[in-house]
Length: 323
Ligand code: ACO
Image 1 (cartoon, rainbow, N blue to C red):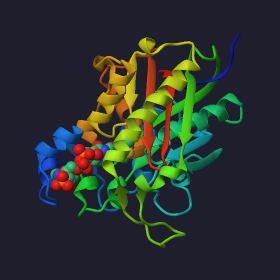
Image 2 (cartoon, rainbow, N blue to C red):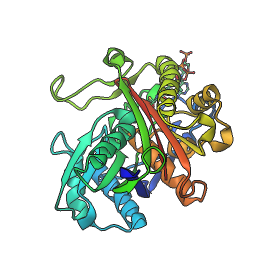
Image 3 (cartoon, protein in one colour):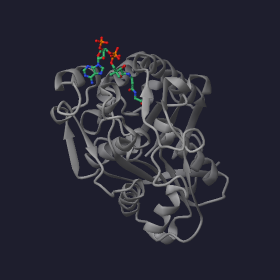
């Protein structure tokens, strides 16, 4: 029996023009290409141009996804932007994206779950579409994350970059649990917020603040939380981990990607990694990696894809879907 499901009908991404290498980073803080490569796998990251906003990046990624999906602005009735680096405190960046794309119907709002934002946004949009409240959704992860970095802290500034990725979802009749978006598992634990946070905010300091992180602790929690989320989402489906065609993790650090894949016994040939080129683009990293692997022909229509992420909060989660 068929029912209303969400189908992913297009993906897109956008990177700012300016690419920054590890050697350039070593001119800013005491670090080296060798250290960054060995500890993280990162070689380059992209930096938004002066005046280039998160909404500009999001709208460009979204337009690519809409072109790929064959939809126009009039078709879109839901826009969710996952971001930690909004244009302004308010209005939501999603409403700026809505205006930039020429969408004048439906609803647009932001989701804040830091690096897990895309998984949270995808799960939210899926529930709206399955409930019949909206029909065609843009789910976007976009960041100008380098604007909240402390460029004197070598423990964090070498890790992150800017960029955006987007998917178009459409509500259609289909076989639930077999086609389109299959399942999600999202979690949060506010007790661990001091391990990865920003030391400023509207109601606390009245400033934007900078990223602060206990790297080794985040690393430890990332591997175990992500593994647990993946096990939950797979257990709730009719699939096994071996059935997954592609694993598209949040691109935080190659060592976290390898650790999770090893724990879950996912063959490295199924893992999409873009962390060497993009660095950690927070909420943008999964849709950016997904679009990269679709465009270069690795991920094909109908294949089973697993995504996962963990971020500040802590927040973490995983989703399973067919593209
Ligand atoms: N260049 C050179 N040396 C550095 C740098 C750098 N960029 N950064 C830190 N160091 C030094 C430290 O000062 C320390 O020196 P010391 O021994 O003289 O005190 C030494 O390297 C080791 O520091 P650690 O923090 O213990 O290094 P570690 O091996 O844990 O690597 C890293 C640090 C890469 C941050 C690691 O902890 C990590 O990847 N953690 C996960 C963090 C992450 O990915 N966060 C992203 C957001 S959350 C998410 O997306 C999952």
